[in-house]
Length: 105
Image: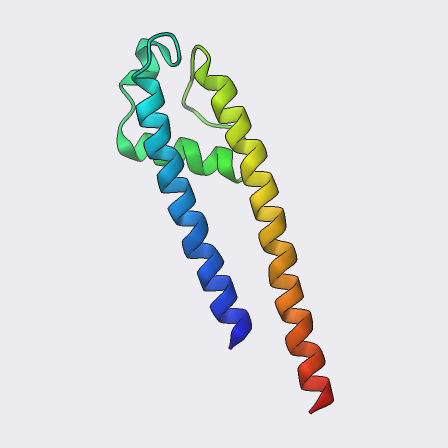
């Protein structure tokens, strides 16, 4: 049960992170020079898609960004890679702990 709870908790945490980063992207796109006129018209669905793809480090989207927002999304990809790697390591640790506990019973 601990493994499933940990997995679901991490999933919800990552969804919250993606939504938070999408909101940050919306705010940053309002700054002059950061996003350009094409980026400023993105819908919330577009922003969530863009952020989710970058967060999972796929980095390929059909959304074309202009200006310095490209660097922000690059840093979001790096941060997403780090967080997802840490999450996988933590999930593996929980799995190992439960496996050892089951072997000792």
